[in-house]
Length: 353
Image 1 (tube, rainbow, N blue to C red):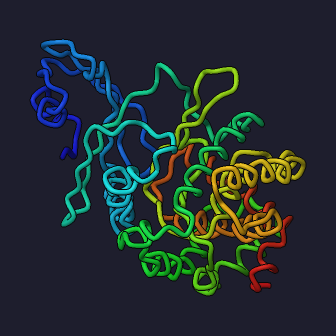
Image 2: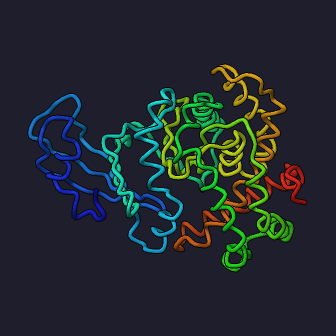
Image 3: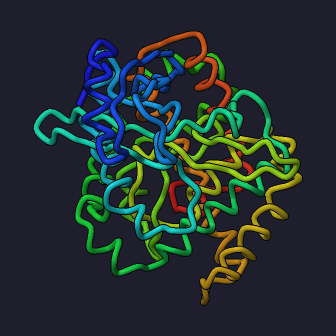
């Protein structure tokens, strides 16, 4: 594993990618982001021989250098979850489009990790949460989400994975969220309208009640399904590739579609488009084998799921190191999610108002 770019030497890549055969003789590194919780670099590799399986470049992902943010990620086991997703869960999700993973290692004692993933930059374009998604992009993401959910729908295989199925871990995270309300309002409250502030003041203190009321059906949740965590193919009708599985868990099926559409569409567009998009999503679930779950069930789960982002952004974002982009994203997303929860009467449906 690595903790800094200095460790990404030709020798390290030769060991990490040893199954591919040749020796790496040179490495050129380029920072490509990674979000708040991680560092991410593109490594362009020179090999001493060329084989079909030797990539010209790869993406390397490892923990952030910010101590506070890293401690938060480790406390929530984010690094462990992503490594285990690629090593243990992905083999059971054959139809879900994700990057090829060449290397995935975790130090369980410290929570440190390293991933080496396929570099898809030549064939895809990254999503941007600050740019509204198109209808085709929404359809592409919901198609991949339907594959993820149908493959894990009430699955005994995923239920037998303790690291994934441990609901108490999620309960503990949500139990801690009320403490974040005051610092969050201090940092971001100026960006909200009064009804939005009232929503947060009403539901955040009841985070523990909300999480304990989760019911079936059970699916694998991505947990942070927004366009910053998605790549789109350059085809006229794009296909989506899902990234960043640091919040993966088992839970109800309505949260990921609500989180994604609430993030990706302006309030006005979402109000017009969400029912049609959700109907397409439900059709794909049915086509991939899900039964006993009609559209009314799907829409109710979606309404219930609209509160997930309200909790997540308030409970965690106040602890993330500030930057101009991060603060802009949080303020913009929070307004959209608050509007969504109010429009869908999510708090009333959950018995919180």
